[in-house]
Amino acid sequence: MNDVFLFFGAFLASGVEMVEALTIVLAVGVTRGWRSPLFGVGAATVVLIAVIAALGPALQLLPIDVLRLVVGALLLCFGLQWLRKAILRSSGYKELHDEEAAYLAEQQEAAAAPRDERLGMDWYSFTIAFKGVLLEGLEVAFIVLTFGTTQGRLGLAAAAAGAALVLVAVVGVLAHRPLARVPENTIKFAVGLLLTTFGTFWAAEGAGVEWPGDELAILGVLTFLTALSFLLVRALRRQRLSQQPVGVPA
Amino acid sequence: MSYLRRFAAFWWDFIVGDDWRVAAGIVVALGLTGALTDEGWSAWWLMPVAVALLLARSLQRATRRP
Image (cartoon, rainbow over all chains, first blue to last red; front, side, top):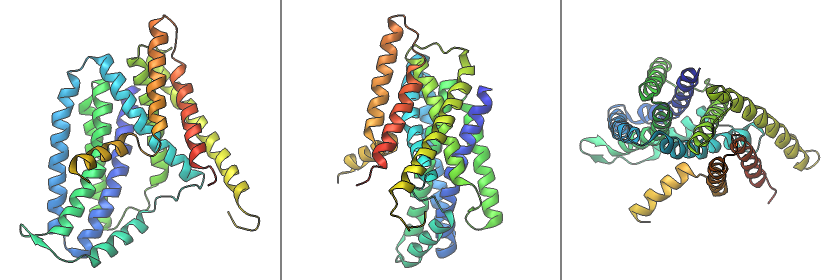
């Protein structure tokens, strides 16, 4: 069961980050040509692989309790950020992420940027694609490393990320447009719940806790956090509506 | 801003994000969990409760009217 959660958690988190990276690369590629952004994607991928290859084995050298405490705490901080944003979006306090709008904004910027040739490349296209893939990819690397090392299943977590990469790349090439139909906001909510659940479980284990039911407790924590999140969304929606002046549509 | 400060700011934003009190609360809750466990108490319930309180309080701060 743990492996299934681990795989889907890493797969969904990686997929949703890759959809965002794809939007950036597509916008720059369609507007200014493909050669330089593809070099940027390649360079960022090499850096990310190097980060995972260097940190993965290094983290595995730590004693398991220390690893779970530190990595669990980091994952918990990270997961709560996702969950907090997802709840703010669902309750209407924060705008929903719109891939189509992000694509158009990125395209406008790409069209307006001057051409600067360096190392035989369009430097703007290269750096935007490099930064976009690296920044979104760092979140993927973080999730793969934390999920993988604490469970001793780095290969499985990396395979989940790899599967997400292949799926997003294939669909992106076929569609040749941003994947706006991917229910990104819902996936981010689910990922926030999974990251927070695993972070809570591992960090507490690292602090010496023995969970009732051992790994089955993960399901209990997930159910508790899901119920809590829905209650918070409902309460915040009600609060937002009550804060609106009379006559203003919700 | 120097390269080092930008680097630190990036990682701060990456891990801690918009509300540093959540991260601080997690550290305190983990410390308390460890202390209770060392004393022989069953403290498995503490982290889920702490997470719930920290999340609710952080959302309350984020949605407070200016």
